[in-house]
Length: 223
Image 1 (cartoon, rainbow, N blue to C red):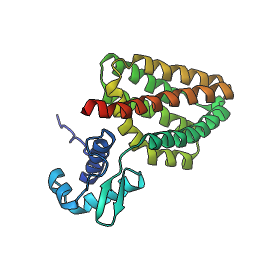
Image 2: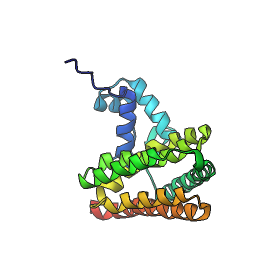
Image 3: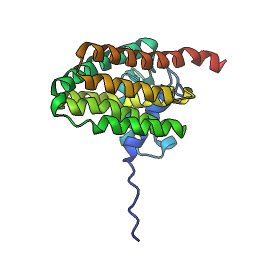
Image 4: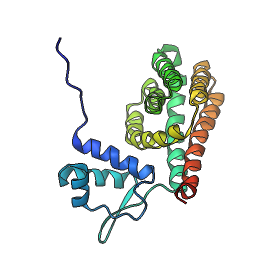
């Protein structure tokens, strides 16, 4: 039997994911000087991928360029609120599109994502849960049919993935969150716009609140 090789993302992409996660988790603290040589040595890559990763992280607002180099900016409470405000605007538009097109839609992507969330919650598997969670929300964009809206969400998805990795680890029981997604999907499927948008806002407010709580508790954990 021939075993297919395991696909691994390019080194630059792996580096970007790792550094983003370290910043979101607070393990690379605000003000940390990110020296290219040090990063290349630590992560076992050349300086080219390091420069690419730092440029992307600056676009995401996690690092900033100063006179003497690149420094960690981190995630403040204001950053989290702003990110979720942007996400609510994007996803609200996607849900409107879904409801407009609902008569011709196949709901399997939403149902499949909820099933995977339930399974991951039962297995206490936060990474699998986070992946299914993001697939659930991405399904709104795919079903809505607006390619540019979906492309805009794709730019933000990696940062939200890093934040979900944090909040899902702190939530001991993920089953209620899976049920929240199932309830949201059902409300959207009814075609009632205002209840669907209200449910989406409540859902995203809950996610935002969990991330803000994690951020607020960090000093106490460090002390």
